[in-house]
Length: 96
Image (cartoon, rainbow, N blue to C red; front, top):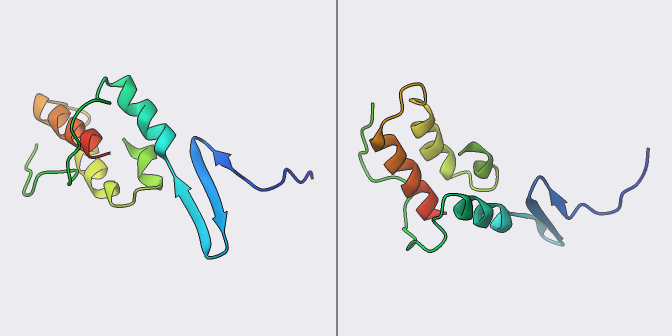
């Protein structure tokens, strides 16, 4: 076994160890994701899903638990994707 010192990055997540706890940041991962979908210059929004969305990105939810519901909601219908589903995913990305 080898001591590799204090962990700073893991799978694109920055780990910051402080006296009062450990902070996880996904800024670089989020920027890369937005660049891949050409959404980096879009205006941000305050919520990941519209209220009462009715429709017939999982790794990011590790550091943003509040995105878990939105991503789970959209992921349920991956077998039959429609334009409405893509619009929901784009809204989630704009929130990021």
